[in-house]
Image (cartoon, rainbow, N blue to C red; front, top):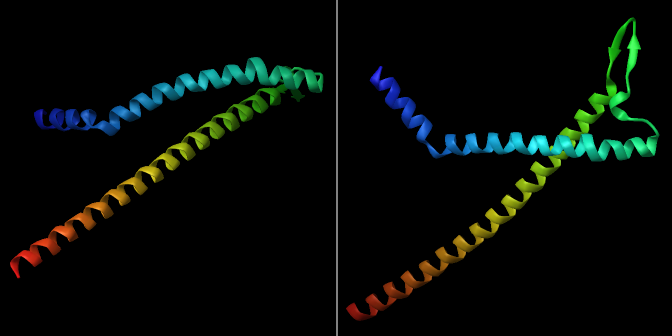
Length: 126
């Protein structure tokens, strides 16, 4: 049992697990913000344009109520969240590429310096 607890502690204390937990919490809060944006601002504006409240759009078939307006709102929620994630990922990738270019430049500078040192040492030994 101690080995199990030790392995579990190591698993939980890894940076990736903690980062994931933080991301889930922030993602849930962000989802609430987007839902409010869609429900309280975007869909009412669409409702003004179309002339109907999207949340009230329903279809009754054989006594069953199909709330397709709520489905449309969920799709808009998803699209906004997907767009935000895409833009965030794109920004991070751009940042990573800049950092990689800086690293490549640093490495090449180090290589040049080491080659100069090597050449100087060769001259001294001759």
